[in-house]
Image (tube, rainbow, N blue to C red; front, top):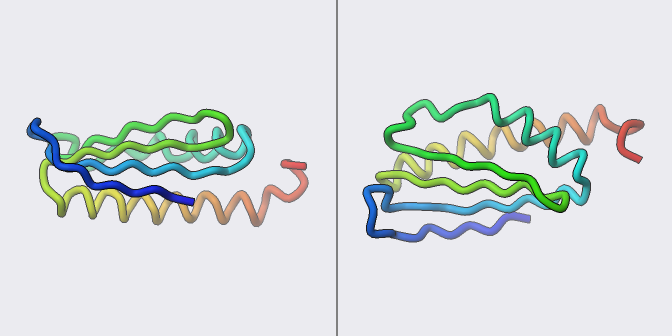
Length: 97
């Protein structure tokens, strides 16, 4: 479900991580994207997050200046991603058929 890679780079944004979530539905991926896009990073000078949707998948790229900021941002994102996904599973029964 998710591919994670922490890669050091030569810029000040030394740590990065990529996440790919396959919803197998463009509608579900777009709903989750829209729900999560409003939550901006609390420390944009230390963490960047870019999200895109394509082919029923949500792609998220994180960059951070330190590993602890990357971990905290990724962890918080996973919490809200899980909530959004469970909400769709629970209440979207008749919508996505």
